[in-house]
Image (cartoon, rainbow, N blue to C red; front, side):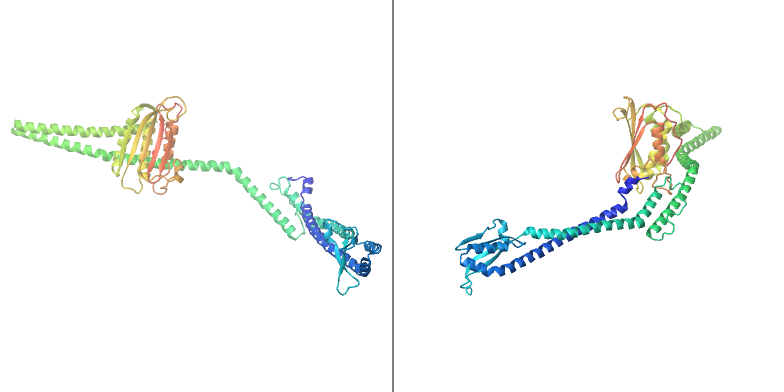
Length: 525
């Protein structure tokens, strides 16, 4: 359960409701009592003033005679008579000639005293003033009266609030508190979704809480059914994932095989086209030799062959033989390069080879394809080093980088150049872990359209291509990554600026690790 019974009692909705309700009533009661106290104080003070004024008016003439005749005893007697009133605290008389009578009050309270003017009895029509009477109202009497009245009212309000709290709490607990506690206990049931109770939560109740309970129970039942379906899916999930993985691998292998066959066909077609020229020239030269030997043979039979004619024909045959030698040498070179690249790619054989030489051999086999494009290859090879690694992987890596630059780097452009560079570095210089062994850094740079930032991090993902449905399989760069990291035990990185081109940087150790994986036999565009 999320809460213990004690915690639920301290944080229950009924207690919170009572707290806020009584708190609001208490605030309103304080405001009401303050207003009532003010009104009662003003009324009592006004009544005290009225009583005092009425009594003073009854004793005004005696005061004036006593002051006029300078009768101190009579004046003091009248003062004590006024002070005998419950609402009067102090009375004193001030005269300009005969002095003061009574005990004046000093300080701030002196300004609160009621002031009445005494006139001369002989010149009453002229209102000649002979002194002033000061009467100070007794605050304690008024306060006692107010405390008595307000205290009774406050006691009544407190009793009312207590009775109201009991009634509200009883009604609230019956109508809202207990049903909500039932809902909370239902939600706190262990394994509620896995095994929900079948009994109806609040039978026969059709108000808002009853509708809430029914909806909640229906929702739990739906979640229970959903959980059962999820558990059924989970039971078959491993088998389903295995089946889908096998299907994905088959599709991937079919795509790679299709691209491999397409690349092989393009390579064979390019080499065949390139061989046509030297073989055609050799055939034409052989025909020329045949014609020359036939001419010499006829002239010998006719005994018309001269020394000059024989020398001319021999010179012609010699020049033609030289042409045949050169053209067949060119064809032999093309066939040798093609055979070496093909053997390296198919044998998966690790051997020692010259790194720059493998790059040149690969470019020689790609030359027929590159000639058909308006793009040129610029070489800056400075890694004339014999390495112990997999030449087929290096050849395939270079082919994929060149063809990727042609297809994607210069998309929409009619010309461009691709720069291949290599150099020798030490592993420590290039930031690699380990000793000071040599490594080769190969860079392939194009000056084309570049790659947007949103695609740059996905370049090496399998099946990621911007030419999906247009002849791109999205496997070329993924295979390059596998060739570098798994077969050649190296690293590959990419940097690109939109509009300025893309550069791939590959670092390969001179001697591949013995446990490095066998190169991948794929050729993807």
